[in-house]
Image 1 (cartoon, rainbow, N blue to C red):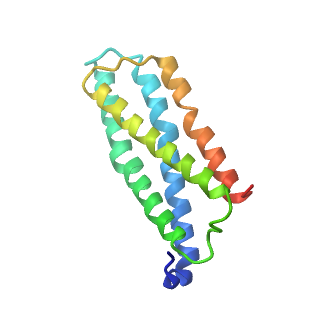
Image 2 (cartoon, rainbow, N blue to C red):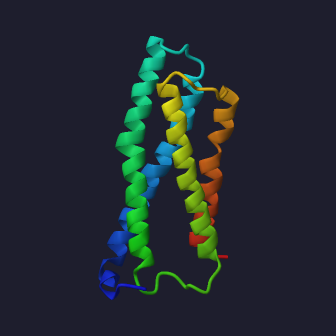
Length: 149
């Protein structure tokens, strides 16, 4: 199903989609790095409380709205006639990678709640490795959209 009236707005929708993705990815790159540093602070310390505020603001004021906007504009793009060749395989891989990115977003939320309750059980090394997940998914998504193999 497509909505032909979206065709005249295609370039605007695409521009806002790209801006949303950039904001979402910036947060997805930065939040795990905050968790790396948060691991090194004693629970309940002044530094730990500062990290909690930073993490909450980043998550609630940037990452969540950017993800919602990314999905919203992405769905509008999918509904625009001629944007996707439904017989091509690239969009399946892209959609899977975006779903995995959204799942990682959920994991970041769960980990933030653990820090908030001073119950983090993950190591600094774990978060250093987790910090690479959005990069790998972003590479896959960009290749699927630009190269369309």
